[in-house]
View 1 (cartoon, one colour):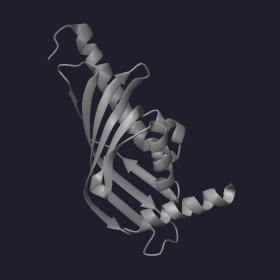
View 2 (view 1 turned 90 degrees about the vertical axis):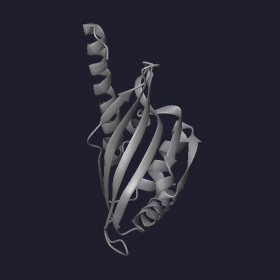
View 3 (view 1 turned 135 degrees about the vertical axis):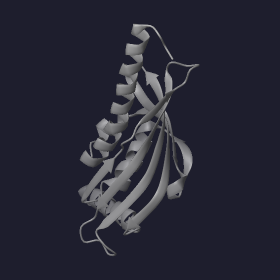
Length: 169
């Protein structure tokens, strides 16, 4: 625990900036603002979505943003909530922290075979690093507690996006 006022204020500012980055991650997905989404990550970034069947891997930031765009843009609407931020600072490195949060990710795919609604609930563990541009996610681990609704919706949404992307070219 830091005791001087300047250090305490800096810690509060860091907490706010870390939370803002994690919230920006969710908002950018919902707005399909992929430039904003890119500002959430270091380059490269380690992504572990193994709970959803995607092996953990290191990505160039732009490659991961392209991947997320392809997987999420086909949905008619999305709503991602990331509440209950618990931030742990690395006591040995003031430029690193971990932000634990809940994940509530609902997806709407109008007219989908099997139903319009897909919901995932779980957690995010965001390993954060302070950069010259601010706090960024350098390692993201998604935990899935449970899913409900149309479990095939992500595959159908990605296919719809790929078809629309191909026809626009």
